[in-house]
Length: 452
Image (cartoon, rainbow, N blue to C red; front, side, top):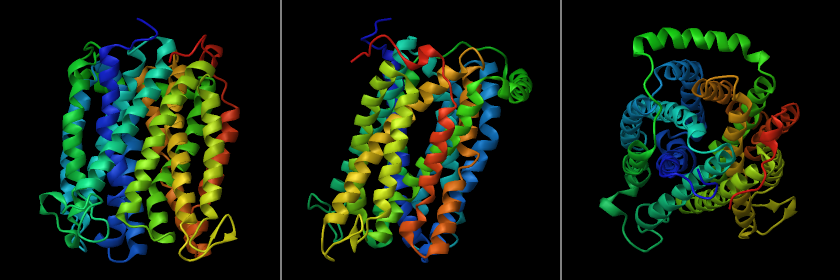
């Protein structure tokens, strides 16, 4: 296979990230989450707690079951049927978010729809990630991984532009293009924000098709019944021998910590901006576009840096920059920027937070792409790849409650929403320290030449 041209299957695989990204961009981070906290639950404090509990429940479900599913899939061989089933329930969960009317009672069905969509999305990504090693040569893996993340972030930019231009009002009753929201959406009933679920579902249905049509799958192995028994047995053996797999165990712990910090930054970034800076849906949407655009650029450049220098240096530099971003954000509010007082009507805090969003997106893109590349190198010849990504999902979700929990405790203790985000700094720093002890194979750290 050529180093400069990727296969059609690899390019189709990248579009799954494009298809899946709106769920994280529109629902988890920038549009639906702030709407849920402020309008579905009338008390913002209670709303934030409910949102955290929803994420906690979903994360625990994924963390407990993902390794088992990965082990079973390694025995059945084929991954597309699993992805297809998970995708069906993901779409159902997304459509169900339309029911999230302002102050709806009871609101537990909305919680169930969100958890269903979240869990099914995470399940799909386990199997999508496990397909990566078969899509190119060893030298191409970093490039494919980075380009996949870049494609996903580009999808986030496009869908946010669609939302701001045609769906979300800017504070009055028109969008930034000066037109009424499509489909006669009523902002008073939260319909522009509620539409994010169905929009994410339709977007996914359309753009996930290339992967199903053109990306090759592995051959079928054992029947499902046999695979369940063998898969669970294999997983138990894997957990017993995990500490004997060299740096893989340390890497899973390190990635668990810094990915939890990153998830915390994204999960509360929009909520923080809405509370501390008073941003509405338009500013949050622009913030999302900035973060998604730079995320695409960061993943693209990070993928090439990954191929040139290996994934570990890319991860380390990304974490250092994310710590800097968190510190700057902590010192930005309506009264001051970096502890320097500003006028009440100054746009400096907004500009600084937009810059922080840009750096956050760029570092997140490169960090996530390099992290799954490093997992492949660390797990190679030690674990079946789907099982390795199941453990990766477990490590990513086992403490997914930690950042929201620490943010909630710190916010309550200090009475400051700004200081409340400070625990992510400690989590990033801990992840960086643990990463130092991860020793990838020499060939994972350097390839002969990057492919541009």
